[in-house]
Length: 227
Image 1 (cartoon, rainbow, N blue to C red):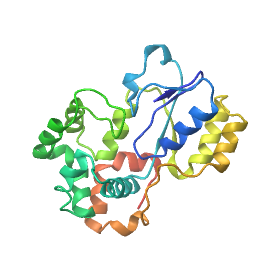
Image 2: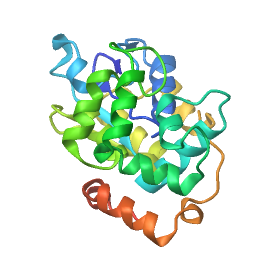
Image 3: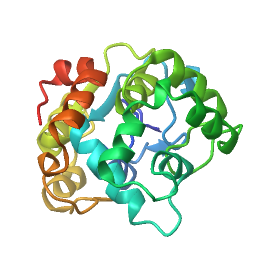
Image 4: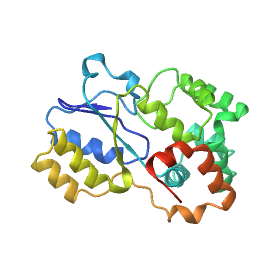
């Protein structure tokens, strides 16, 4: 979460937020971080009148990116270890477990035990209380992250990762936060924190693709995504 004089930016996990964070902190003098991957409910009340900006991406692409990022780490996070049975499962079964996590009581209990009581400064930054939220929502994991982050925000302005540079320029211009530095960053900065992988469609069989379509259906419909 970053606040400036004119906006609040909420950072949705692996959805282009690192790029936006870097631009704001480099180019907007008033920008300052409040917390890492903090949801809107953690916004200090003095900033509650500011417009909220966030990002989103195709859920199928998110799951591919999440899997390959975690699989490439020497020590992946507890969520990956649980869903992959400690790296014993491949992409399909790991993502199936992640998308269905809200109804997997055994894994939820283990996840809750492994998460911290309070926020940290890295990773997904979920806490033990997040497990109850996931269980109650009963949606795909990416939809859970989206809903958790933006809940309570009044008409957040969501930038699609697939058109991030264009839409970021538009929203910064509309909110009066565009300047020469930001223009140059949008034009020239490389992608940040990007995970190498093939096109998402190469990883999904019909069954797994349909599972994501069902569990993340509201998000998919809202932004018109497809595999």
